[in-house]
Length: 139
Image 1 (cartoon, rainbow, N blue to C red):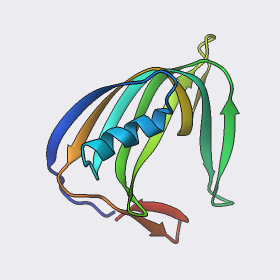
Image 2 (cartoon, helix red, strand yellow):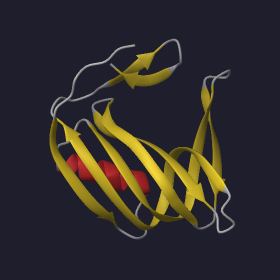
Image 3 (spheres, one colour):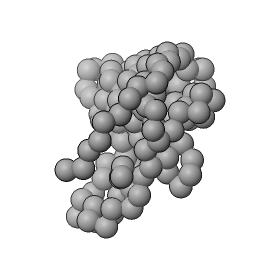
Image 4 (tube, one colour):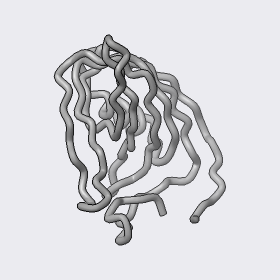
């Protein structure tokens, strides 16, 4: 395990714009406030979603698209730097009207309504390639 202590420097709450991309709203907030590392939680609803699942055997993401309204029952993730740009690593549990849940890495979704809490860290976190998992992970 690799770890280090982080100091929180600021906290933000945001309301996402209807029609915007969910993950891009988080990244825009981070860019506007110069947040290069942080942790967020969010909730709301989306009009559609592209959810990724990481296939550990093939070491690649598999994509599933949902072209339907979904509740964002839970969304959690972190902000870090990837290739010198802000990246919001976003996971979500989405629910259908039946209560059936779908979940995974939320790559894209069209906001219907969304609220977010972002806690910024003092020091940047940068993602680098990990040869074991073939993922870009925190240093």
